[in-house]
Length: 330
Image (cartoon, rainbow, N blue to C red; front, side, top):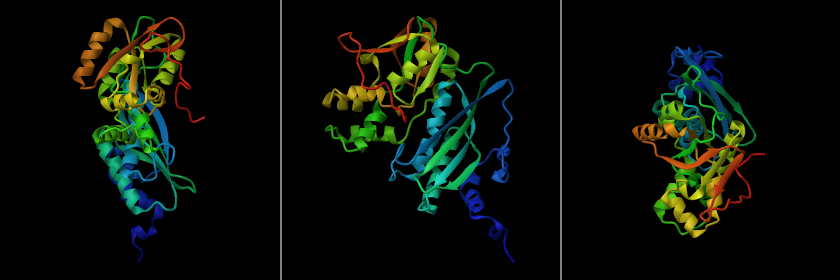
């Protein structure tokens, strides 16, 4: 007599074994249905975001499966943070090559579980497929904000101050290191840059401060120069940033000291997953205090004025010229 397990397809067994334990919300229905349900918190709007990462493009084949899973979640969590939203849950779709086995899936599921718990963001479902190409992981994330309070890119006004969280350029420099660069860094500096590329640190702890005080915001995924330019374009304003005020880690400073041309890489390279936002001048002190309470570093780097575009000024006060403003897949 066949057991219930014998009657399941291989895909059903995979889902039940690796992913059902992460689907802790009642609306996930134990991943036994074709869909899930979610009741929005009272008086809140839902905030929706989806992003995908692909082997050989966003991560290396040798990266640990658990780290790949966490990166897939965190790049989406970063967008929610910049909208002032708190995460409610996510869907994940996997396209897996035939050489992906049980060990990789076990590590991937463990990475999902760790960050699903850490960010209070349960799994609601998804899909699994085979592919002849590289691994592809697509996450669709759902968050919430009090009704009408999502922070948009369009909202910056002349007179606002420009802030950025954390430090800029570490991940882009870490990727260059992964590809074989050598700037005579010490082990701690190398490890810092490599880890920032490998695993983003989304600033979800800052979400409430952004929602309460910022006039416009977005996450920095494609490079600070290009992303701030996008924010200015949608808002119909101009930004002036002093490059010397952009926060850099000690490791990034050491790399740029070795090769000054790396400043452009830091400002335009992407994968920072920090938040850039504009804050009215009379809200700036409150924003700094809220960020300090959330234990997230923020730095004032520039100002908003009438006009268009974003200028980055060097030490001589002249505008820096970049070969490209930001990373683009196309």
